[in-house]
Image (tube, rainbow, N blue to C red; front, side, top):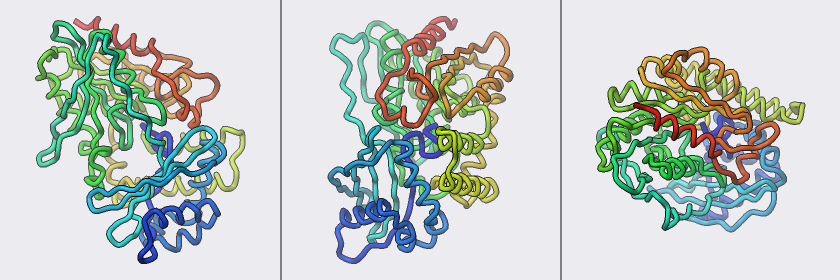
Length: 432
């Protein structure tokens, strides 16, 4: 689950700011950032639409914006703005440099020169290099057909071992938020690491862009858990099983974070299609409880909570209460309808009811999905069908580190620990 304060490594804020006629989008975007840097939150709020004033009042905007240096270190210079157009919107992206890494502000203007979206996210990483010529696997483009009628397919990549198949295969299912096929978090790409490491051990892996990443325009109004995740994952499993070189009886699903929470649900929607489930850093408790817990952890890492930070936590608690009671309310621009549906998911019961073998993996330094979840999984899934591996040094991304886990850690480059990937490979190879 890409974080719950900020989808793991950035803070999501959507606002609407009317523009002065005739000004360039880059000028308007720069002015908005200038106002935030100057602490002019009331002035910024005054230019919001009525809807956004309700969603992001000045005190909430202040708490979120001023949390960035706490997460990323001291702010530095901005980079040069880049502009583009998509679906009738003009988009301005401005790099933001901090002591512990780079972010980027993405400001979207509608046809009336109002800001239709404002997103602070990790800086776009460089394109991953192609596999080495002497690698014992290759990568090829793969389209996941839509799991719902009338929707376009999703671009993906299939890592396929070289040699004579058919090969066992894994479909990777993302955590929360709009994620690409590599599950890119800052400079890290955990899905790329897992896919290539498993392919090198003779296991094919399909990774694909999540629909909220590939088609964000389709999620302006209400949508369901199945619209966001389940339908496409089922389509990916079915399509991969019918692909040349793949052993249709040995297709597995690996769900990371929210993807792990939904793995049993996906299996139940694809009866007879899967040979087993791998749950990596999977929550066992309600997502909104974890959201509040994560935020409190992050703001209290220095041993205290300031008045400003407490204001942010209070605003978050109020927003959580609102989406729990009102399907039309929004949290991180996601409607209450979605949050309520997600909270009804019982991941342990779903995994158990799937009747599939399950491998569970958990990092000991994970501050997003913690020991309380791990213990619930251990208590709820007992028997020969279940295997558990705990890695004391790993964080939520499966990357090793030291000390308490932190959001800043996601801005440092690393790779998924080979021991974790090897445990997945050995478990799959041991399946009958």
